[in-house]
Length: 387
Image (cartoon, rainbow, N blue to C red; front, top):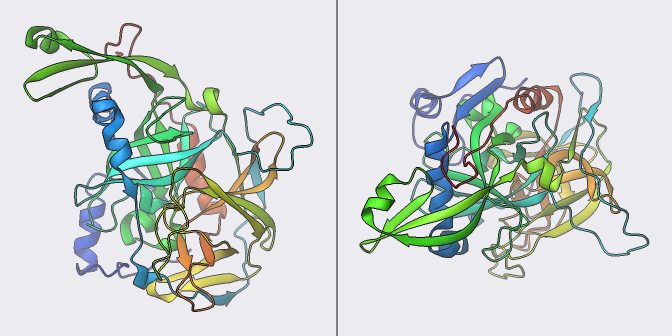
């Protein structure tokens, strides 16, 4: 297990100060750190209403969580891997019916966007996927799509997952994050070799309609609501059920041999370093190929143990899953990585590689800690806060 001693990404703070800033509310059990997000129904309803307000205006205004173009460089080979234990897997759930002999790639229902507010107050998003758990309430994404490494705070604010997101639409509801799990080295030292996170989410919320009410009725409503311009609105919502029951959950694999074929999914949106912008971020894209057989490193981020994949996508793809043994008929596979960084291998100012942390036994420990945590409901049958 590698420990790094300095913060990455150009942070100016001393290591000791950074550790205090990032772990003030975190708890750690060995290599697993876990942090509360919206840890009660009132806070969760407030987060959901923030994104529902004005017919989802904040969702549409959000932009991809971008990397500085100066940080898109060439990754270097670092040698082979020595797994820290035996290979392991957890099977996916929610298998879809076969689509026959379809030649196109069938997009998994599990993928979507995570939305949040960064340290500068901007509305941002990354890619993510639903992943199998005991309570069918877990999301897998990149660690930097959960922890605010740019401003050296703890968690990103107002964090939600929207599977199947498309231009403000949320077909299976909005899922508010309850608790974030990641490796201690990422939470404390911003070690991008551990740039992955698993987030438990409450049952989804679906917006049925907005009702204009008086101040008195507004004050008496114990559920999602918003006021602006001197007017008061109740957000009449309903419980959408558990994430995994609605869209299924991908499996997970760790300590696998490198050089295997994977299919990676995500929502690319940012321009390449040369300014070319081939993607809009509106619809998910995918790449298919074999991961690098050897570890790759990115010295500017102190990365030593990533795997690479040839894939000419751009930021916004961050956090999207790399699926091993993906079944086009079932739309399911095994998460064996998440997009962490972007690389320019041929030096033409265009992204042509993406990288992911190698999923090993320590990744499995973080996942296993998250998969057994219950989250529950936010709203009751009449749109009130569930208690």
